Amino acid sequence: MDKLKENIINIKNRIARAAQKAGRSADEITLVAVTKTVAPDIINQAIELGIRNIGENKVQELLSKYDVIERKGDVHWHLIGHLQTNKVKYIVDKVDLIHSVDSIRLAEEINKRAQKINRVVDILIQVNVSQESSKFGIEVSQCDEIIRHISALPYIRIKGLMTIAPFTQDPEEVRPYFRMLRNLSIDIKQKKYDNVSMEYLSMGMTGDFEVAIEEGANLVRIGTAIFGERNYN
Ligand SMILES: *Cc1c(COP(=O)(O)O)cnc(C)c1O
Image (cartoon, rainbow, N blue to C red; front, side, top):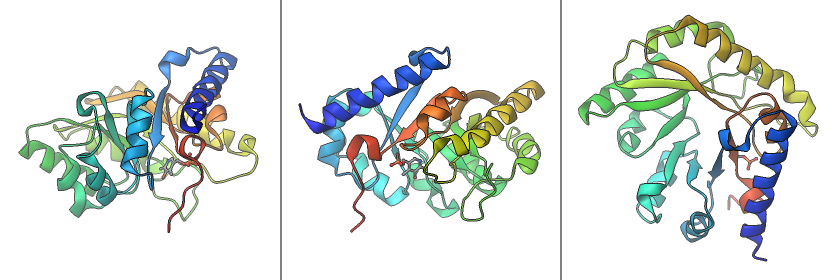
């Protein structure tokens, strides 16, 4: 069997098993195929095989692929990497969900650009639960205040939280971080802010998505296990 097809089937089975183990339905978990460094023809093959959500971490790369990806109406684009304020204008009309909002300034720029095209943009707040200095994302302690502020912006809807766990050999080590993000989303949900629903928890990558699903993830961002090891050359 074709390797890509095999990988996708395999990942879907693993998602289903992790969901079942946690007493959840696999239907509530969306697979975001992370396509950074992956060529458009391969992405199109993945779409042919049923992938409907694709994640890019760089604006430039997303733009270079946007027009050559097929089945435009059916495919949802996720921006999962750090977003610079000056790049918002290029993607605000293209992405379905921005996972990586990590400042009020960025949210304000998204709001401004969204207003210009009369579109309400869905976003997630990226939280640095592990407090690694190398990672983007707001601190847990700032979360409430920042969300309260962003909730007043009319062209943005906060749909949930996202985190990137530290890289480890043993995914059990990052379970506490996923649990922390989930608890944070429960706290925020209880505050019932306008324009804030805690519908999505975006957590889990190739090395740790099963643990993330056990801890409540419903958006998993998976690259390597679908497309193979990346080559950045
Ligand atoms: C690259 C990337 C992923 C996917 O990582 P894999 O380990 O290849 O599955 C997920 N989320 C973000 C933000 C990424 O940049």
